[in-house]
Image: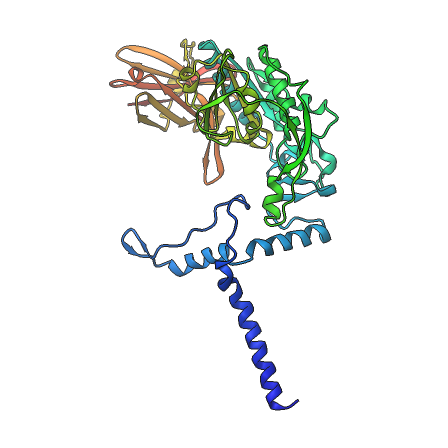
Length: 467
């Protein structure tokens, strides 16, 4: 090979190498990433200054921005995911599991499916207690309260899970919690949906399809005793209009439309607050319909909203967290529905409802001499907000409520606290936390707080603090 040809080939290699290296940058003007496809927020373009000072991390931040925005990134992610799924039967995404026959599953449902890392007995009791307190709060305002759990997809369709996922236990948080409920009306969607022979969830989505939503809607409204339209006679067609959320996450640039049930149901309700089922708070009005609904829900409620809104004169649908029970008063609810997906039940470990704690009679307390100082926090707002943790779990039964008794001006008033786990950095430090919002007058002036609970079935003081 002569030197001129050799130099020409070398130059060509350099040009091709540079072109390939620069293409992701140069082509950014022509290929912008489609936002919302990967279930996360892309890194924003960094600022040269932060708080009036030069950003010393600008280059590192710029690198992170480029990694999220270089040209053809989503196409490459899609190609890699397709190849990994088709050849190896595996998922290249950390949030998605590739199942059988093209089914996809959300990775956050795996522990429920396997019966792994289950909620403890105290955590189940905490969740059941908080639901009981919410139900009592609603009943005191003349509203009927109903709790329901939207099943994980693999709880209803385990046959499509990969064979390597073998359940370790038949125990399930959803079953244990339902059995622990006391005085709470429970709508069993597992039984309602399992009774149907049709597939009620999208194979490439984590949620139910519209037919599944109609089945869930019927189960919930049937439990309320309210007269309602079952939509049994509604015309139904099947159209290729759905894009699965899991498929979008895994294959951001290769998403095909899949089948969805389309019900011919006129929309007669209008929005008074919010403008879609995706709204954090949506309030609807339906002329000619009676009753008022407040529904606390998650993304499974998106397809329930249009169905439920048609059946109530006023309906408020809240995705706000923590759950604000003042909506029951604000919208004078007749019916309150609390819906949560199975995979999120452990959420009850650290979130409690926003509500005035119910007042209780002072129980007979023994062992006051053993009452020790208890570390608590108190914040002042329009009401007194009290939170703390039982420092020694040996002082309390696993199935004991916690009362906060406040003595001020010679008067003692007791309130039942909501129960929570204390979490730090995602790690549960204690399952014996408590939280209560009490009327402001209960903590006016100098106040002595006693925290009482049951040990071996007898009430005793487990902590005290003076404000």
